[in-house]
Image (cartoon, rainbow, N blue to C red):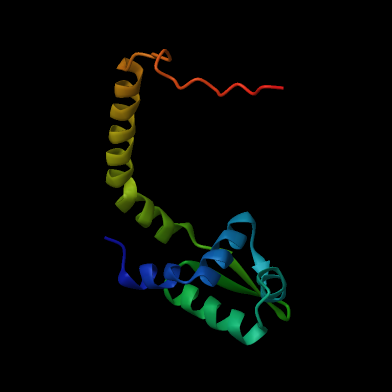
Length: 117
């Protein structure tokens, strides 16, 4: 099971937005601030939580700090969720089979009202 720190980090919608943003490509803090519409101190706090959870890495590029997504914790989360996806897929497949077996009888459909002109 993924570490509780990972779940806690992803519980916040702002942090999930940052993760989604970093999924596209690594970004400097300034771009993250602008894209998320948060203050720089608030963004930095969220990035610290994500970094401590292992979800992001940071590298220094001259005077800028560039953040990138670390796929390892996401892969761990994906592996943990796999049995649940399988459960849902089996349930949806069974529903699909049941619906396919149901006769398509439209003779009992209510008639549309007619209007008199």
